[in-house]
Length: 417
Ligand SMILES: Cc1cc2nc3c(=O)[nH]c(=O)nc-3n(C[C@H](O)[C@H](O)[C@H](O)COP(=O)(O)OP(=O)(O)OC[C@H]3O[C@@H](n4cnc5c(N)ncnc54)[C@H](O)[C@@H]3O)c2cc1C
Image 1 (cartoon, rainbow, N blue to C red):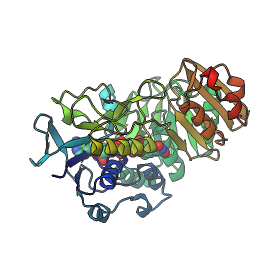
Image 2 (cartoon, helix red, strand yellow; image 1 turned 180 degrees about the horizontal axis):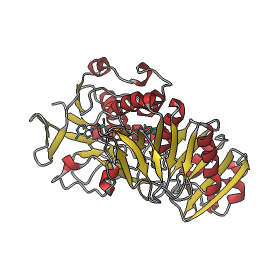
Image 3 (cartoon, helix red, strand yellow; image 1 turned 30 degrees about the vertical axis):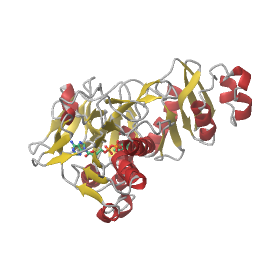
């Protein structure tokens, strides 16, 4: 009898698992359920759509025919509400039941609202969160009309919202806590290059700020943001990116171990039999740093989906997830790339090479665990190789900060290993 694989979530993790399962098992029954109204699209590119730089078509990845050709049953607009792990059944909002032999949880996250931090009018009209293509359409439409704006959330998604303001000509302020953008991974020296990039696209960074409340007009549309210092910023458009709540509520009662994400091992298995998880939602066991970790990146989610798919078909630990993720930003004249886990570490090294070239590396227990490259990305493969190899390099900072890293000189000799 063929095995029934049910995948919840048609983001890149879920879709890549479905594709892999079909490649590995021509007879498997595969069902993909998503609460979105469209099949997989490129979430990375929706920011370009919101900026007005790309039409809709190139953002779509899979048309419904893609699933039909592979005999994958795709159910759109289907919200999964509950799992009965003992009965191997899942239940949807419309009262439908799907039986599974293997289940993949690939439901990602939902952007947090400032309402959960007690900010008045945090969900008013004109205040945007950014995750889906639907969000991008609303962002684009209202940004075209907006004159003034604010952005909150000094991280990788917040900067996309700032870039939308820049591209759409919104007179915008980027309200940040502390003295710099992405303070968990960048020093002031590196962040200043990004601040200049923001100024160049017409977005003004405001430090030691944030939002205490939003003001609205009689129609409930945002008109201003007030920061903790009492400063008022006119804004008829606002973008908020302060992190994700992971979509785990439907797993209540299953006994799946989780804590701000689902725990999986390096084979993408949860602690509950026949239930796997992949993508943004997982806190996986990272065999490179030998600790639990989480990645919010496209490449990592795709690879995790593929690894989960192979292990689901094999019904055992066939392949482990071992991956150095990367995330790039392309809004400025200079390229920007973070890799690995740049916000971790017990040691660090950094160097500025020119006005817009900078490198910072993070180390933990002597190993390279991540970093950020601005301006010159040419050393990314060498750095990823060093990280993947788990080489002890924290005492070789000078060599790692050279413009051209001599990997052969850093490679441990067999005796040293
Ligand atoms: C604007 C933006 C820009 C980004 N830029 C980059 C970038 O430049 N580089 C990079 O590496 N990464 C980027 N990312 C992050 C990257 O897109 C994510 O890491 C990746 O898409 C995660 O994939 P996923 O499959 O784990 O989750 P998701 O893509 O979030 O997919 C989860 C799916 O599950 C659905 N779902 C949730 N709950 C249920 C339920 N109960 N029932 C049914 N369906 C459900 C959701 O609606 C969603 O479709 C960006 C993200 C955004 C939003």
